[in-house]
Length: 108
Image (cartoon, rainbow, N blue to C red; front, top):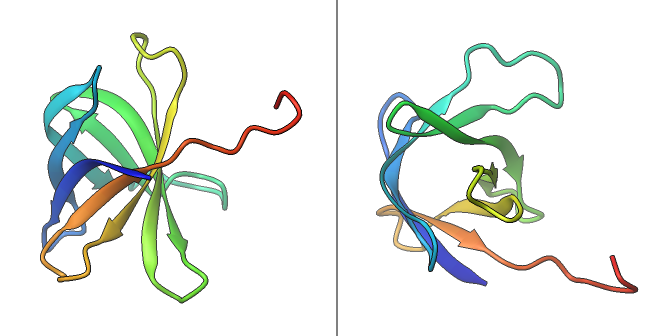
């Protein structure tokens, strides 16, 4: 697992922060509630850098009952989408975007 982003939450359930990897250096990332969401599989949030939408997020809950957002980020410059989870830091001061590579078995 690797932390690829840091965020702060605002009063209106928006998150602002940055995403940094070897190939991505995005500041002023905004995660906003999706008021257009309809259907049980629709994302609860949209992810923007400036005016460009780079992904979506879904509200989820851990086995321990802690809420988090599951992200799917994509861009034409990516070789594949990035999947990550936005979780509250242990100190409660902010949020970390955590990425981990999916397990690959049997050529999956």
